[in-house]
Figure (tube, rainbow, N blue to C red):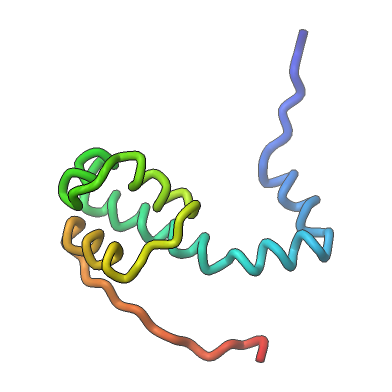
Length: 99
């Protein structure tokens, strides 16, 4: 039996044609950006999730949940993450272009 694989980009392109999907996806943009920033900071620090967890005093599973976007971290957690990755936590507010 052969399987036909469809590239995720092709599937996403189709989904984004649906206005309801596009609205929900846009609503999650900030969470995706946070998850990407966490992954980037850990990678730049050359740490595994396990190493980062040890430096933060938590578990690898918690780090995985942070990076997946399944949990929204507190500023205290973000500060611990920044310290463990030797980065500086900076939170900003930007004008809403849609408003």
